[in-house]
Length: 283
Image (cartoon, rainbow, N blue to C red; front, side, top):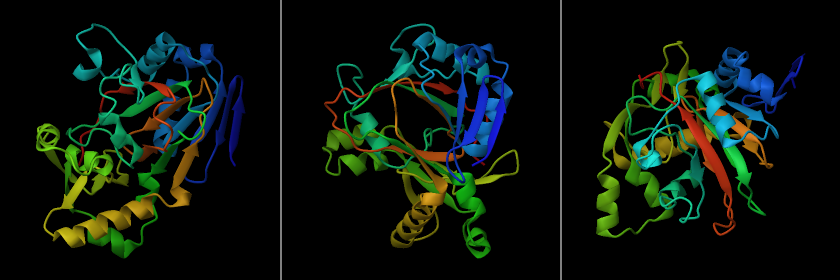
């Protein structure tokens, strides 16, 4: 464990290859004075936990603005102006798109239907399930770095077709024709299996939306994608966050995969999420 300490700013690594916890106060966090350091830690460690920071929705929005450009989505705005938090819940009365969120229980990267995915997500715990509901993250930079060199040579340059409907089949394998058509209307996207970032670092682009590697048969493709997912989600690359009320977690969406772990969908579990606009296209 590596720890750096300064006034109202304690940084501790929470897992060997992913995740840091920062213990601070609201004033320090909202001042923006540590914004560049937060971004550096986020990129280097993938995930930052702010235990028990207890930001209000307005404070979370303000914090989001300090570390990047606030991301808006039409489906989240519902015709309203301004900045809003997005409710992550299985309660359809709170979030009418709750069914769509069921894909979040499987390893994924947000924004694979876009050329430029969101930079980061910021999520705060508002209500917890009595059991379950942890969130897992894996570091896809570290997973690439630790691959054997011959494996790197084999997969660097491969392209993968991603489709949102593939991720929905994980939780609903026998949709109606109408449901499938609605999912398929969101289209597909061809992405690199290995993302070479502007920084020069590389990460794996995997997850539940990955449909097929271009240029190889479906059986070989599936075997490769599953094998790489198993590799990227080995314990040394994973951090599992057990939520307590008031926790806020920030993660680098361009260098991690994440998933929610099972919980009772009637429990009322509620997270409030904000996001940073994408800054770099898949390459």
